[in-house]
Image 1 (cartoon, one colour):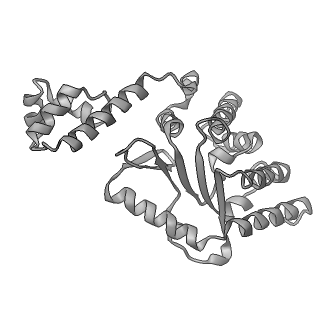
Image 2: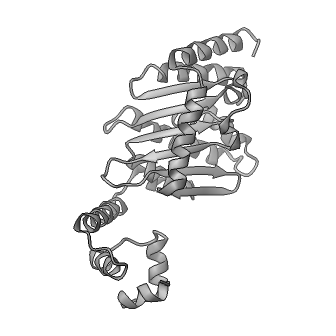
Image 3: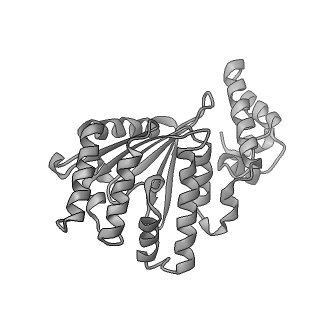
Length: 266
């Protein structure tokens, strides 16, 4: 069926259908029921699940989160809103410390090192949003974070030795929290399945809610919502985690690396 078929059933335009399919507008219950009938979906449990997802989505759209105070977030605003509603996040990082674990000095150095955003105001905005996001790790409802980080991310001299010492100390402390799992994939692991790029998997508590996979590129973002591709990312993450050091070994690795920075051998 085409968007024209759906538009006719909804007594609306194809533009309306396109906006609904793109997630740009909330879904109304009568529209959901009409589309289910059109597509031959009559199972009450399945229809009820869709109606509940739509209700949750409408509530989220009404929410006024702290991120609305930062209009400069741009495309990241959607990610931050999802992150704020999530119950758990799994992140695989090749070159950077995950944003939820960055220190202000590290975040500031990243902002100033980006030639397209190298302005003091932009840098301080990034630091402020990083700190605000990190509240989810210690305030109710507490977010579960599982981060697998490649050794290269810890050896990049972002901001210089002093900044990196502070950042590594932050990772040591974070790894002690019960809701945070940190694993390091060392250079010694050789070739690995995560070499294709970093990604985040965002999970929610609502029954039937789909996992969302987020990948950031140099000039934009890529999103995957549920389906086989999201399941493939989950499987990939688990395989990368199996190749990484165990939690206790990762903590020892970070501690030793921080010692190298302090002794000038970084």
